[in-house]
Image (cartoon, each protein chain N blue to C red):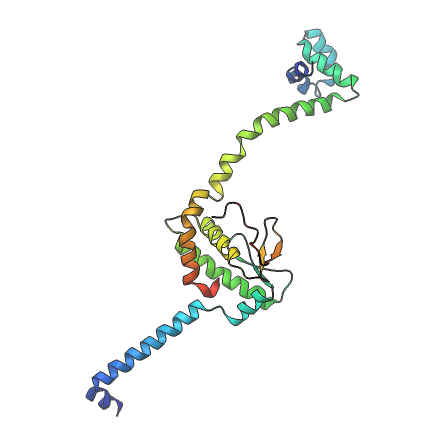
Length: 100
Length: 134
């Protein structure tokens, strides 16, 4: 039941802007699950805008894992470089003890 | 007078010059290797601490002399990092790696930056180290 409504929230996510045009959408015979989602949100006492936000939040959560990990590793500290530098860094500290 | 003595005794002159050079070499090495008394005192007093990024930080609010000293030392560190990192890594990576060692080498009572960014006092045990540290 819930999963059907979630897949059907694509039209529901657009609906905040179409809130006043709901009747028109219904006349045009949109996908049933979208109307069902809108009705479910109203029945739950939520506004259509909130249900739209929930729908958007779901989309972002799906997309999030791809983004940050690779970029962070490249820009910041590269682990294998840090390990390779360890001995070199120790030597540098020894040679410049006055400032370390 | 002196010219005559040097020309008449070149061996003595060379010996003296070598001794002077040796003395100069030793004094330069000492200047590089020893921390300044002010820096040593500030470390021991916990007025300065080792940051995770390989640079020194001023702990709390300290006098302008401490801040100036930290700035000067950090400039020198950056120069060393820049030279040492060339061809091997980024300066940031080199500084970070050195910072790991510097935090590990802090003595009990000295300050270092913990994982949450706050200043910690080094105790008898191991310090908090970044998981990326070697």
